[in-house]
Image (cartoon, rainbow over all chains, first blue to last red):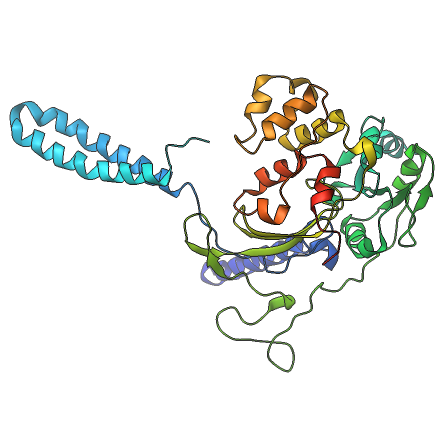
Length: 113
Length: 289
């Protein structure tokens, strides 16, 4: 019994959900009201477009600093017993990350606005 | 009258002001009137107020604004000849009564309920087109990539006509802008701002308009932070400071087609507002595109 009832109930729920979404999403706005408000003007191109997310370099900078800290904690634990080798490894690691920070600097992520 | 309609009657009336010639001073006095609230988009308005004469070339733009106000809506022509047969005309200095009457009106549609640009496909029924974009949906091309003027990334450019009744721009100014994100890539002035007379250049009104764009209340205007909120360079801080001191600004801007590209939208709007309307009008070409 339940093997028949469950799919039926699920199907009915799906239909109810679809109908509800259709009712909610339906608009009675006229065509002029659906146009974007540009003070009386009209757009010449569609609004669907790609543009640059300008916080992207800032996100890169965050990752650069965050990675640094993430590896420096465990490094600090083993630093005393490993010695100069650990220092050299961390130096190389920080050197590589600094390139990222310098790149971010060039892209202007330090100019706070 | 039910208690609900009594309450509704006492509510503030949301008015969208389409400012015409010599209408800027008129509209500023309206903001102080009780029971009337100026809104910055027709979507939130109940009444379309045309303050000052609008030339018939802009009638279509005005009709679009009227059609963008959700029904029920009313229209008031304040010291302006009617460009379409809706609403009533007010000759005097106080449109308060007419606005209240218009708030009870229900204008019929002014624009036909058809797409502004009909679909133009390649097929016999207007369907289909070339490539991924599928032709020109609703008669407008999809935004296509162009070089970004900041860093050369090829990103989509959006072209549109802004104005003449966009509250962020000086009234009457029509700009054909191409933008990438919020940066203006190219600009052309299709029509200059309307003449506003000497009252349009009054320091208090100019300062009030600029502060409103910045979202700063009049009481906070004299705080140091108000000027710091403006971008450095291009003299915006100097001009707003002069207006706040009550001095008239006599600087002339560079023509918008030269000065706007490279600026962000918010900065461009403030830059335009930082010049007296008469000076801005003087540098914009007279002929309409």
